[in-house]
Amino acid sequence: MINFITGLAIIIAGAIIAQKAIRGSPKFAWIMEKAVFWAATGGISFYGADLTDISLDNIDLSHTDLRKANLTRTSFKGVTGLELARLQGTILEDPRVRKLLISNNGRSEDFTEANLQGANLQGADLREAILVKAQVLDADFSRALLTDACIQDWNINKNTCFQDVDCKRVYLKCSLHGNFLEPKPDSGEFQPGEFEKWITDVRDTIDLIFQNGLNWRAFAFSLTQTAINNEGLGLSVRSIENKGDGVVVAKVGVSLETNKTAIHEEISNHYHQAVSTIEAKYELVLQAKEGEIQRLQTFYDSQQKFIQGLITGIAETKREVMIKGEGNRIYMMNQAGDIMESNNQNINAGGNVDMSSGNKITVGGDVTNSNLTLADANSQVSNSIQQLRDISTDTSDELAKILTTLQKSINDEPALSENQKKEALEAVETIAEEGKKPSGERVNKLCSMALNALKGIASAVTDASKLAEVFKTYLPTLTSMLGI
Image (cartoon, rainbow, N blue to C red; front, top):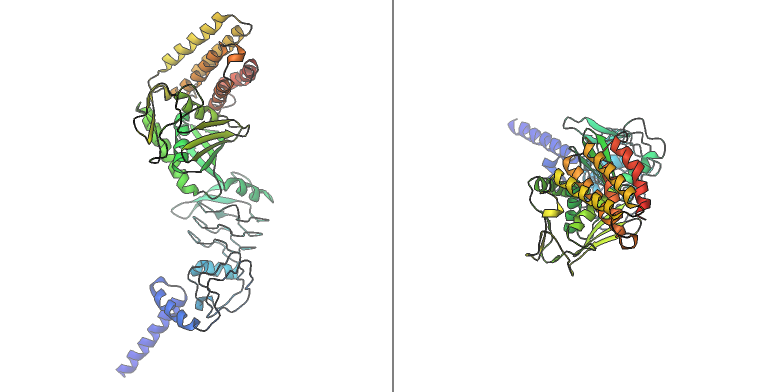
């Protein structure tokens, strides 16, 4: 009797274990793996086969060997027997993915960090699904239902298809308690076709949020350092928007193959380090990979123009500016074709530039203006404007009056930080210095960069501010007077 009871207990325990193994319990995965191995022996083998775009709908795949097969856009609707197939090295290893691909229904399901690369999700119901950090490279969401899904940090690329997706709203964050946050659109709903357009724009964009305003020098530095560290990386400043209460959102474009999470983190880290460096009145350092950069050259007459060039170049938010690191060169190019280049030859530097190390370029002193007070900046601007008046040309008086108005408006603007005021005054001084020269001797690029810097500063204030109105009134006149 005891032997019977013991045997019955073993049978029941075995049945329970087998059932859990079939359902995908990690604890008993080794049992399932062994059982499937023996069951699949002699079955159909698709080992390493290319099954791209193949339909296996409603087929019994028991005992089939699908290991390492290419299952890009392969259709598994209504398939049976996958729990008895060999699936190592494919997206079908994950029971959640198997269930979704077979039933085409993932509504309210959790696919956090799921590998759906190349999955055929045509027409799938993914409403309210959690797709946090899901890998959906090359996946096909054509005609899928995505309304109210959470897509926080999911990974898509240019081949992820969203044709005719039915989506009225998505969420960009999921709280620790499972609540969906940050809906898109911010209000209302996506109209037919709008989600596809929105996701196309957003999938190659990184959103950088600055809670305490934007330090232009730190921002330019962080983008440049990131470009140096990631050879061949293309960065484009898509837009910079003042959201109010000191919050600024910068949208930075990247290539579709970029690891956006890693680049976002790198830019942010460099930015915060640069802000701390500037506030402590230390030097900003562009740190290159060992042996790649020995010298840094610019097209300008002093090293300080390099950082200033970055600042003024990206300050123009109406044009897309590319920052690209390639080997030992850094390029900036905008849509108008203007190029700013730095490489390792014939450096012509001024100010505080430490060339003692072959793999480090130290930019300090005048570049960051960390030692220049607001009063000093105003004194320099006033001197330059007075010298402009003393020249007494046809345009010098009018130009001096405009620059004086700009100087006063910049100083009176409460929305600007002290650093922003100093940067704006530096641009005014540049215009005054170039204005003293005969028109044929002016460096048009410097004039253009200074105007772009002022336009960038304008993005930090509201349209209703007095400074914005002054810029709106006088910047077109300055553009005409300087012959740009």
